Length: 155
Image 1 (cartoon, rainbow, N blue to C red):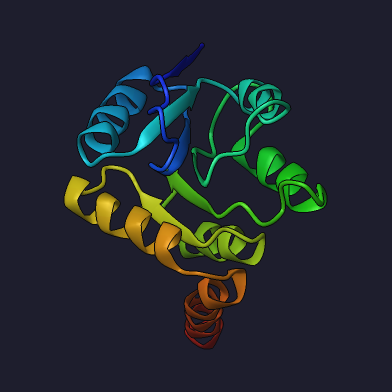
Image 2: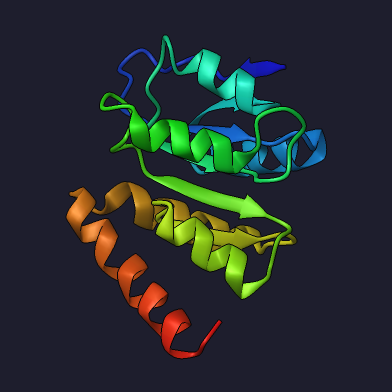
């Protein structure tokens, strides 16, 4: 499954890709993001995400971890290894709430790690933060601070 919102004529709204095999989650996130003014591209699998990235480069990817076939971890590894895609900010959006999973996601290069169920207002806040930080270095600082706290806590 791949669904998208027709782009605006001026293409100024950021494009957010939502990758999740739970169609209800995709629908909710898509409606909220569209209402907030974002263009949305949806993929129901890791394979669908990578296929779409051959022709489009979103401004942000919201990525589930537990999916059949390619997991979110596999997709994130692929993104970070590809020079063309490695600077796209990725937010993990998953039911995996253990500190070890959060640490793994941040260490793998995710700029944020949100646990399902999530607050829709909080989701919009995190999406806006990820899109409005002007450089990868500025997005990196909070991620590193959180990783350091998790390490100190022994998580």
